[in-house]
Image (cartoon, rainbow, N blue to C red; front, side, top):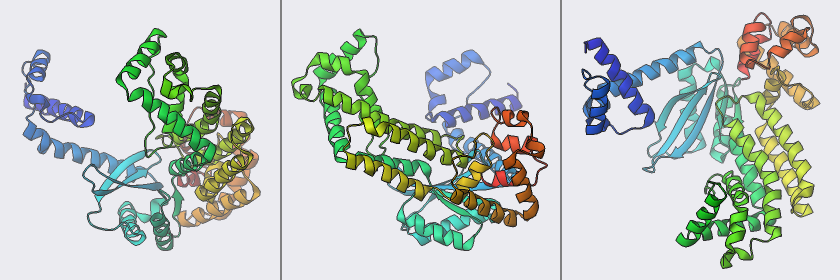
Length: 427
């Protein structure tokens, strides 16, 4: 094998190892060696040392170059910050940049620094300045108290940047609020006890799996995560899918819990919890954008208010759910969400209140100032867009937005309009 072919093969092999998290000793395994030899006898795979040194450096540099090029091409970007502890207990802060497609920017080891609001703000300012503060329009973090302090520092330094609470984190807190209600908590504990009783005993677990197999069902009982309340939905779903098998088993420890009231509670609770869990999954996806959040909360409110009267919750608890949803929504939503919704052609603008519309106008005006655009022309273009005049008069242009992203729609079809640059700033 000639040298260029060897280098290309090594590069591809190394990338496959890194991307799959495979062990670096893989190429020294006798069976992998045999497999590669069958494919190409002339090819010698890289050593473990090469995979952990020069090939790793080259792949890192390649990815970093691609990330930089992606960010440089974007006119407007947002920064997403997420703090966590790694398997060694070290404090780590990850930074993701949306262009609007998300790209991983960097990971910072906080060492022995306390995660105070001032420390986080200082770190965020470094990231913002590295990226170019003039093109950063939004900062997304979780809703912790130290983050709120950091928001104030960032907004003071960069008035054009909007700080936003993570919608997925907010919805997880909504689930936590609902699960804290007495009726929901009691049901949750009963359900968890049943799952533990079956999964924790070898004979019971084997019997359950056997009965599921007889019914051509491969589903197993699931326990929820201790950190993500969306796992409750998965547990309840698994219980309903295994309902017949559980009732057939008639385990003495759980028989009293498997009555009709229990199953009715699981089913009615799922009608409340499932829409929230689905919303979390949607908003955590790579394709989620700010305009989706406005629509998401409106749909959640409608769905939950529809199913609450059929739930087993007490009237006071039903009221608490509605209030919690509104409180979480008010915390999460900012005028920039209304502006993004207004500028997303796939959504009609009927759900925005008068206050939200005014807030959207203020955001659009402020962003026009920051981008150095003629505010009069921008607002004039907005008026035509909202009343479907000029370029937006025909049906075809509105039908097209159902087949392409809003960013492509504005850039490809409406790029000549004064309003077009504002869409990129609200993605």
